[in-house]
Amino acid sequence: QVQLVESGGGLVQPGGSLRLSCAASRSIFNFAAMGWYRQAPGKERELVASITSGGTTSYAESVKGRFTISRDNAKNALYLQMNSLEPEDTAVYYCKANTLVKVYWGQGTQVTVSS
Image (tube, rainbow, N blue to C red):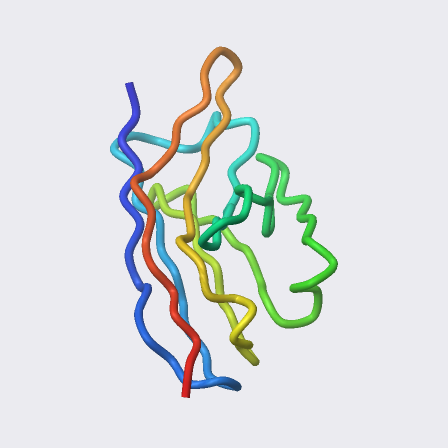
Protein backbone atom coordinates (compact mmCIF):
# COMPACT_ATOMS: atom_id res chain seq x y z
CA GLN A 1 0.00 0.00 0.00
CA VAL A 2 1.18 3.52 -0.80
CA GLN A 3 -0.04 6.80 0.62
CA LEU A 4 0.42 9.97 -1.43
CA VAL A 5 0.12 13.36 0.24
CA GLU A 6 0.03 16.54 -1.81
CA SER A 7 0.96 19.98 -0.52
CA GLY A 8 1.80 23.43 -1.82
CA GLY A 9 -1.57 24.55 -3.13
CA GLY A 10 -3.12 27.88 -2.31
CA LEU A 11 -4.35 31.20 -3.65
CA VAL A 12 -2.15 33.01 -6.14
CA GLN A 13 -2.62 35.96 -8.47
CA PRO A 14 -2.56 35.52 -12.24
CA GLY A 15 1.01 35.40 -13.46
CA GLY A 16 2.22 33.98 -10.17
CA SER A 17 3.91 30.69 -9.33
CA LEU A 18 3.34 27.72 -7.07
CA ARG A 19 5.24 24.52 -6.45
CA LEU A 20 3.24 21.43 -5.63
CA SER A 21 4.78 18.50 -3.81
CA CYS A 22 3.63 14.90 -3.48
CA ALA A 23 5.19 12.83 -0.72
CA ALA A 24 5.01 9.05 -1.00
CA SER A 25 4.96 6.74 2.01
CA ARG A 26 7.56 4.44 0.49
CA SER A 27 10.19 4.36 -2.21
CA ILE A 28 9.07 5.56 -5.62
CA PHE A 29 12.13 4.17 -7.37
CA ASN A 30 10.19 1.33 -8.99
CA PHE A 31 7.08 3.29 -9.82
CA ALA A 32 6.51 2.93 -13.55
CA ALA A 33 5.15 6.44 -13.82
CA MET A 34 3.87 9.30 -11.73
CA GLY A 35 1.73 12.22 -12.69
CA TRP A 36 -0.28 15.26 -11.78
CA TYR A 37 -3.95 15.53 -12.64
CA ARG A 38 -6.43 18.30 -11.98
CA GLN A 39 -10.17 18.64 -11.72
CA ALA A 40 -11.99 21.94 -11.98
CA PRO A 41 -15.59 22.35 -10.77
CA GLY A 42 -18.01 20.77 -13.20
CA LYS A 43 -15.24 19.28 -15.31
CA GLU A 44 -13.65 15.88 -15.65
CA ARG A 45 -10.28 15.09 -14.14
CA GLU A 46 -7.53 15.68 -16.69
CA LEU A 47 -3.86 14.83 -16.99
CA VAL A 48 -1.57 17.80 -16.45
CA ALA A 49 1.87 16.21 -16.59
CA SER A 50 3.51 12.82 -16.19
CA ILE A 51 7.00 11.42 -15.72
CA THR A 52 8.25 7.87 -16.17
CA SER A 53 10.77 6.03 -14.04
CA GLY A 54 13.33 6.86 -16.70
CA GLY A 55 12.57 10.56 -16.49
CA THR A 56 10.58 10.99 -19.70
CA THR A 57 8.04 13.76 -19.28
CA SER A 58 4.85 14.73 -21.05
CA TYR A 59 2.51 17.69 -20.63
CA ALA A 60 -0.97 18.79 -21.51
CA GLU A 61 -0.90 21.36 -24.30
CA SER A 62 -2.46 23.95 -22.03
CA VAL A 63 0.48 23.89 -19.60
CA LYS A 64 3.46 23.33 -21.91
CA GLY A 65 6.15 25.90 -21.31
CA ARG A 66 4.63 26.96 -17.99
CA PHE A 67 4.67 23.82 -15.82
CA THR A 68 7.55 21.48 -15.04
CA ILE A 69 7.20 18.03 -13.49
CA SER A 70 10.06 16.37 -11.65
CA ARG A 71 10.67 13.51 -9.27
CA ASP A 72 13.24 12.94 -6.55
CA ASN A 73 13.60 9.22 -5.92
CA ALA A 74 15.86 9.82 -2.91
CA LYS A 75 13.14 11.86 -1.21
CA ASN A 76 10.23 9.74 -2.46
CA ALA A 77 8.71 12.89 -3.88
CA LEU A 78 7.06 14.26 -6.99
CA TYR A 79 6.89 17.94 -7.81
CA LEU A 80 5.05 20.29 -10.12
CA GLN A 81 6.50 23.75 -10.65
CA MET A 82 3.76 26.00 -11.99
CA ASN A 83 4.67 29.37 -13.47
CA SER A 84 2.65 32.04 -15.26
CA LEU A 85 -0.51 30.76 -13.64
CA GLU A 86 -3.83 31.62 -15.22
CA PRO A 87 -7.36 31.62 -13.79
CA GLU A 88 -8.05 28.58 -15.98
CA ASP A 89 -5.51 26.64 -13.91
CA THR A 90 -7.81 26.80 -10.90
CA ALA A 91 -8.60 23.24 -9.83
CA VAL A 92 -7.90 20.54 -7.30
CA TYR A 93 -4.56 18.97 -8.21
CA TYR A 94 -4.00 15.26 -7.59
CA CYS A 95 -0.87 13.17 -7.51
CA LYS A 96 -1.02 9.73 -9.12
CA ALA A 97 1.41 6.84 -8.98
CA ASN A 98 1.43 3.77 -11.22
CA THR A 99 3.12 0.59 -10.08
CA LEU A 100 3.08 -2.59 -12.14
CA VAL A 101 -0.05 -3.83 -10.40
CA LYS A 102 -1.87 -0.86 -8.86
CA VAL A 103 -2.67 2.80 -9.21
CA TYR A 104 -2.60 5.16 -6.24
CA TRP A 105 -4.06 8.64 -5.83
CA GLY A 106 -3.50 11.39 -3.32
CA GLN A 107 -6.28 13.36 -1.69
CA GLY A 108 -5.66 16.51 -3.72
CA THR A 109 -4.62 20.09 -3.07
CA GLN A 110 -6.58 23.17 -4.11
CA VAL A 111 -5.00 25.71 -6.43
CA THR A 112 -6.90 28.95 -6.95
CA VAL A 113 -5.67 31.59 -9.39
CA SER A 114 -7.50 34.85 -8.88
CA SER A 115 -6.88 38.54 -8.46
